[in-house]
Every structure is written in structure tokens, then in C-alpha cells.
Length: 555
Image 1 (cartoon, helix red, strand yellow):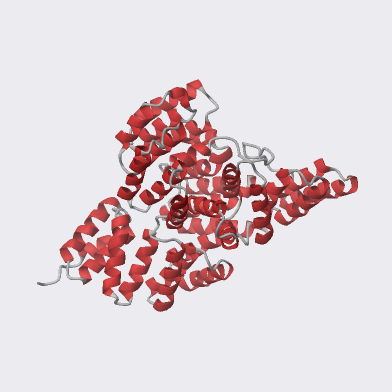
Image 2 (image 1 turned 45 degrees about the vertical axis):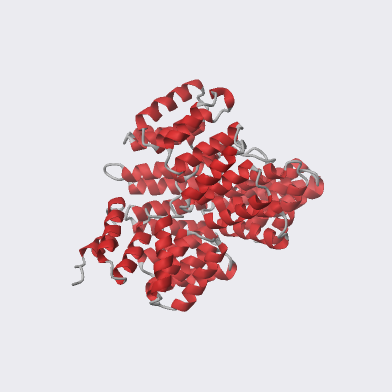
């Protein structure tokens, strides 16, 4: 299975996502403590008891403050059913408080009440004077505090129930984009853009999706069309345009666009310029610019976050660790903690146990973000060839959050990595029974059957279904092309894998599969060129090495 979607560390995020995450939590939620909260006295059961005591006192006194404290304490400590009880009681005391609705969306997602969550969500959006801003605020909260699969299903259900509602399609597109389902995002943006071709932000969102799918020319052509119509004159639109030029591999055009903006035009313009330097690996220049920015504003956590990456690239690990600790608040908490663990692993000698303890400690301090830290830790340990520690932290996470779909999916992928295919297949089947329209789960099971050479027709059906849900995604095209190869459907395998490699030439798994098809088609020299180029990008890939070591066929 290609790893295109799994590489979601901070530097893989778009500039806009990082900059939006640098501020306070949007929406009407009660202000969450920025720094990780210290653990309450006692074990988790005493924390639950404290919340129950607060709720009981609230019921005796009909006290909204005590009800709110009970709900928030139970939610923060991941006791979601208790939090839901407290919220529903709080709502009887103060039905007009919108903070309750925001938290109810989250707790309903966590407890499986998807219908109720959708009702609350659509009600919030409908009563907002600025529905798009309300959606963005809710999505930021949901992304930090809920699991991926139920969150995606929530917005898929909204589109099914209201197929003509543009807000439903916009919301699904935003969720799909955030989760790396770029084909689905592009499909939804394209449908919306047909109806509103003069909306610059919608056009830029569509262009970005096309660029991320590998259709760079098409994306830049749309940007040019918007520029010719003079629709990109605002500062946010020009910053997003610069981000697209960087993603498309034209940093000089992005720099020219940003340098024409006044520094005072928006607070994130200086960071945009620095981001471009980081993408070009101009680490020393970026370091100087970030240092000046932090001298002017010492509370700029996003600047500290960027500086941590720069120092890590320069191998200044002690400084990088210090900056990530400084930035480890709010929206940067998960990525900063994960990067601290990565630095511990890359130390000389590596401190794997220290990295493991760091991830477990931070997951325990902030349980709402714990599963994301655990899955990040699993990925880090697998890449560092520390499978036993990956198993250890995942077992700890599953014991702490036993029904978390993100952890269950990570468990299935880890079993595949360890070669325990039967167990992985059981886990994936269980996930698909709960979420039959999740393209990641469908593709994972179909591809696992494919690499085992079993149930190939069923695998093709699953992956084709995933491709209908997430169209044009190179990872899914690769999976379906590889099923065709195993079934000896040479023409469709050639067509799909050629397209997947064109869209994502840097992906080693796609390159390996495309080379196999070329070899089978009687083009061994072309296959070796593809494998050699891929090996230069991924020098540790054993499959590519074995493929290059096989002798050329006799003419």
C-alpha cells in the first residue's frame, strides 16, 4: 500500500493549515488550556468520579456552572458518555448556550450518536450569520478532537440527506482535504465551482486539489484564469495563490507575489515568506528571518514551530527540541510532541525508550489528543525499524482507548507490516462493517488481499468502490492497477499504473508496480530507468534493489 497519505507530519501540511492552526481555537467552545493540563490527583477512575460528583452537585443545586465544569472535565479526560450526560443536563438549564452544541457534536461522534451529531451540527450552521466561517471553526475543533472515520461518515451522511445543499458539499470537501482524500475533495470542489465560477477561494481550493493529485498544469491554468478575471486581489487570496505556486514547484513566482504585499497587510505575510524559504531548504536564511520575527513577538508559537523544523534540519537537535517544547501548545501540540520524539530517535545514540515515554506521557496528560500521538508514534517507530516499540505504544493506546478507529486502523497496518496478514484482514473487515464507505479501509483490505494473491475479484470490487468515493487518487489507481496486474488484465493494468505514476512519480511503491508492468510488456530498459529514478529518491527500498538486480531478458 502506498504511504502517500500516511506522511502527515507538519512539513507535509499546507501553509494555510499551519497558519490557521497558529491562533486560538475558533468557534464558541470554552477556551481550552493552551499548555497541556497537569494530571488531576489519582488515577483516571478518580477523575471520572470527580466529574460525576460535580454533575451530582449540579443536579442537586440546578447549577449551570457546576454542570459546565462536569461536562468539560469529563470531556477533557475522555469520559465521553459521562460528558454527554452532563452536557444534556447543562442544556436543560441553559438551552441557548451555543458552547453546549459545539461540545455535543464532539461527544456524539465519540459515543456513536452520528444522527444526533449531524442534527446539532446542521442546526449550528443554519443559525449562523456566516455559515462558511461556522463550518471552518467546527471543522478545526472536530479535527483535533474526534476520530477520522466517524468524522468523515458524519459529513457523508449530511451530503446524502441534503444532496442539493452547497454547505453540505463544502463541508465534505473540507474534511476530505484535511484527511488526504484529495480526489473526493477535488470532486466536491469541482461541482461547487461549476455553480459559482466567480468564487476565488473555491477556485483556489479546486486548483490546490488538482495540484496535489498531480494535475499541476490543470491547477495552474485555473489559477491563471482567476488572475485574468481579477478575482485574486485580496491579501488572503494572494497568499493562497503563493502557496499554490510553491506546491507546484515555482517558488520564485511565489516570492514575487508575496514581496509585492505590504508586511502590514496581514499578520501571516512574513510567515508565508519564511515558509517559502523552508520549502526551498534555505535553512540559514529561514533561521535568521524567524529569529527576527520572534524578537518582535515572543508569543508567536507558529514561528517557534517553524524554527524547530529549521534547527532539526540543521542538526541542531538541542535547539530544535527547545523550540518544539516552546511551540507545544494549542494547535501545534500534537506535531510538536511528535517531532520531539523523532529528535530523540535520531540522537546519537538513539533514545528510543525516552521517545516512547515522551509520547505516552503527553498522551496521558491530554487524552483528547492521545490517539493521534499514539498513531504518530507507531509510524515513527516503524520507520526507525523499532517494531517492538511500535507494538508496545500501540498496545498501550488500545488499552487506554479500546474502541478508537484511528488506533484500530493503525493496528491493522502494523500487523500488515509485521506480516500477520490474517489478523490484519480480520481487523480491516471489522472496520468496514462499521464504516462501509471509508475509502482508506476499503483500499487497505483490497490491497492486502492483492499482495497475498487471494480473493482478487473481491479485492478489485473493494478498491473500485474506494476509487468511486475518492476519484483520481493515485494511491487507489495504483492499488486497482496492481489487482489488474495480478489478474493478468495487462491493458487496464498498464493504463491505470501509467496514470498513477504520472500523477505521483516520487512514490516508490507506484514506481515499483509501474516498472513491473513495463517489464511484463517487453520494455525492460524503461522499467529499469523507472526503478533507478525511484531508488535515488528512496535508497533503502529493498523491492527496488531486488528489481534492479534481476538480469535483463535475452532479446
